[in-house]
Amino acid sequence: MTEQNEHVVPDGFTEEDLLLGKKACKYIDILSTSALVACSSIAVFVFVSVPWNTFHSDPGKYGGYYPMQIVLSIPLLCILFMGPRYGRRRKPTDHHMRKGSRIGLYILGTSMILLFVWMQWVLAGEIIEDGFTAKWRWEK
Image (cartoon, rainbow, N blue to C red):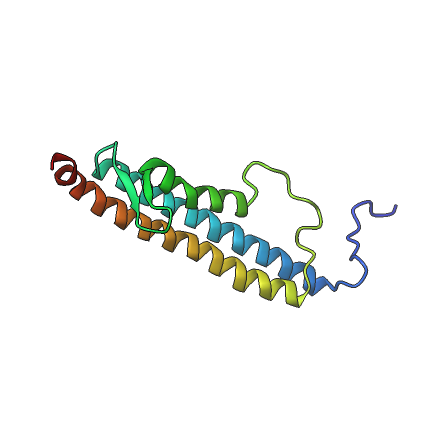
């Protein structure tokens, strides 16, 4: 009787490449899930701390006022679209990575996810500041 579920290693990959690729995929999944939880927690804290009609003022070239709900959803959507496949099926070749791909995933993936968390933190701080000073600005 032959074994039906024989594990076949694709051409050009070693067994170690596949194992380390699975480990890298799992690392990014865990990191992006924890970043999504952190960004969601920051957003909820800001939503309950400032008035609902608070706007984020942009002193840039085009300047303007943007609703805090829109501003705080940008990092969340970025993590959600770039992060793990929530509810989506993985392709069977997702973990097929050589050393360069794994290094890129660890460095670029980690730095991008941490950048989104930092962006959420900075935006939340600015919105909290705008929320506490908005009352006085509108009364003038």
